[in-house]
Length: 208
Image 1 (spheres, rainbow, N blue to C red):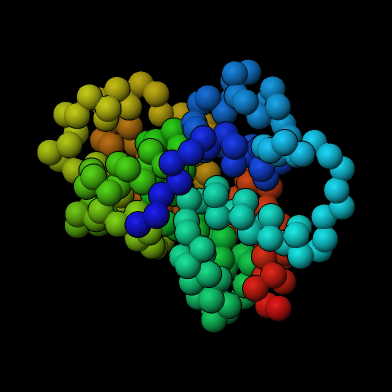
Image 2: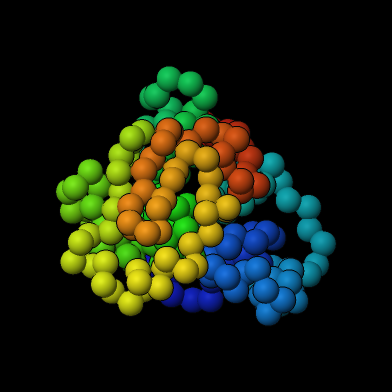
């Protein structure tokens, strides 16, 4: 599977917004975006009018990079959302939020989605008692996500009890650092997604 291996901070600069791809570093003054909030490249600082298509494309790229999915995966989420009842853009964001790696991140178990994806693919979690190592696994309301019993003594999870920030957790998930077990309380709604995303622009892009 293709993987982006260059500086993640360049992605934030390219999209002109913090995507919080590196966890705690993104909240500190050492964040490169704070020091140089312009797109990378020799002529990035020049003024240039962006077309409507360009704005839509940038919005799509931003969301892809926030959730760490490839173009084919992202297109599949859009097509599935378009077949669902309700508003296509909101359905698409809900599907992205319900990825297991994102849920692990939202519960505060990982500091970034990329770290959450690594933990999931290494087989550290169960969903409703069943081992799941697929980052794109779609969780449902009332699903129970827990650290596997034979992984609880891992140094990372032992230290997790001291660092989990329950205050930053969205209302649709819950996680108990003592038992290393969490639950999806409800499906995520548009108001639960804090990223600055204009999903309608993406729908318009794919609708052409």
